[in-house]
Image 1 (cartoon, rainbow, N blue to C red):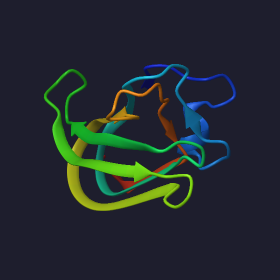
Image 2: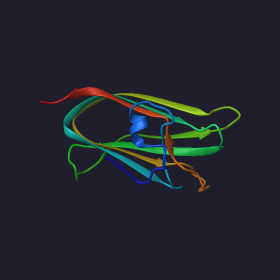
Image 3: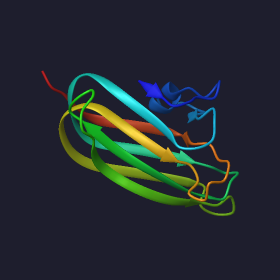
Image 4: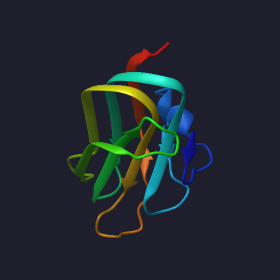
Length: 133
């Protein structure tokens, strides 16, 4: 697994395990989280939860996958969300997919499209599918 940066006390493992407080970047700006799988995986469902109760911002993320550790990435989804402390504080995304031979899953997060000093975070992330034999 690779992360661009990580704030102490907010490890990526807590987001992957669905534990509080989730993951948060140690610095502002675009962040990339890459998950390298041990063997090819058939992916059927992806769930992502983002939460920000403090900042008004427009976040964009791109989720993509590759069947090679150093190969070409294929985009699954590109999504924008407007966070607002007085209303929309949680983004929940659930995707049903049919992907096979997945070896790398990459999540790129642009925490604020208006270039404000914002840090990316993930409350939780879940994957479902079958490992290939």
